[in-house]
Image 1 (tube, rainbow over the protein chains, first blue to last red):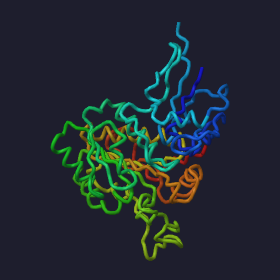
Image 2: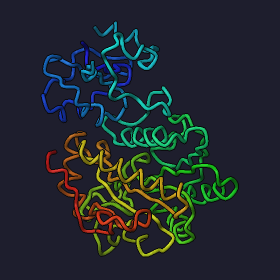
Image 3: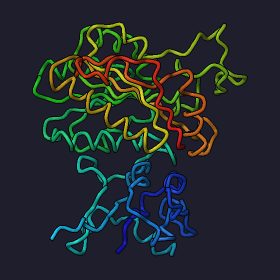
Image 4: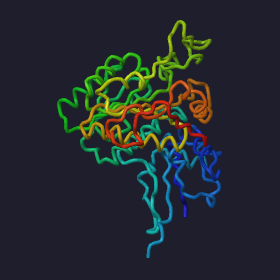
Length: 73
Length: 288
């Protein structure tokens, strides 16, 4: 399951999500987007816990966070 | 990779389906009351975070259909492009006066202003003080980054002592330019103010505190208590000549010594023991 959906169109590569990720699973990628920045990527998807701190500090409001629903029968 | 990303230039992330399977839920997304437009702010500018918080609050209170925003002059001059609600572009510093007019004309509207420090604390100081003294039922979101960002980094009334700007190249000197204006300290003596708080935007924890303060500032208006103002200590990485991360650390290490965070006035929940005025309490974001 992909836990993060980073909007590469908006990302300006400021690196705040990379800095504040407690599991260090984000990094700025090598690719370039249409506005000329290197967008952040999830490079360790298995470490992500959907804590949404990256989305909390994202100045572009460009990160969506998903998680598995809590198990209710 | 780069071509694929460039081709996505016109695509909208928010048009994509929220989830693909039933057992997955979305815990955080762009607020519905924000538009899909790309923001013009510099990389790492906290204006975007505060925009998102305003959008979240409008969503949370269900106010989108009867909100009127008043936008300032400054970096956030195009703020009206980023919110789905109606908005008015005020003359420089006159946002509280325009908001007063809107609120008095139609008191069923939720009226907020979104202002920077050059707008609110410099040219618009008279409008701000008098709106607060009259106890207008408006909510002010005050973004204080201590510099004129848009016009090229000139010294603002809220610039710190010793801060290098383009008009104080060897650092601000108190003897000739005075001390920084603490807007919360200044307004806290006025009885028309129902809620007054200052919060640094320097870590996820402080952003969550900002959310708490904004709820109360909005309730001050909705419950007809008086003026609500939240001051955000914001970064300006470009004009401070710092990286976005260093700028956030600069807020925690330096800026909060001049502008201590906390709740200054709370007449929204006066019996709530945790919300008594405490101007000296600092939420220092120690984890950053």
